[in-house]
Image (cartoon, rainbow, N blue to C red):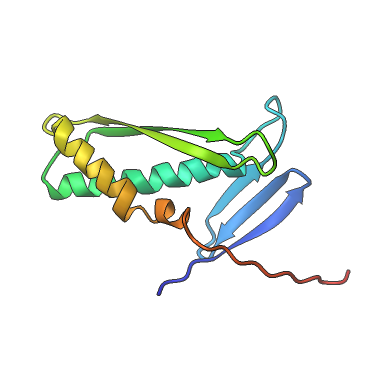
Length: 137
């Protein structure tokens, strides 16, 4: 079993920074659209899902000796109107540029990537636990 971890730190009420074990950072904000600088948490979830699926799909195509000149994924999530405003559904549109891949094999690879190999997609089905600690100031 492999564990991963991040540490999230508050920068301001609506801005945070996430740092992984090797020091890579991602900034997050929940600012108004006119002040927005980074992705919101729910946008990051779409980015993580698209990124994971893309990597798996490209690697499978390359194993089939297909040339990939570009891959773009447009991810759209339909959120519930209540609180929490969770994703009721997510649609991923994969757009491949390749001189030798067929639509049929690309569809097969995408299906495998999203439904079988993408760790993020599988994680959306996971049990989540939590604990709390207070450090007096």
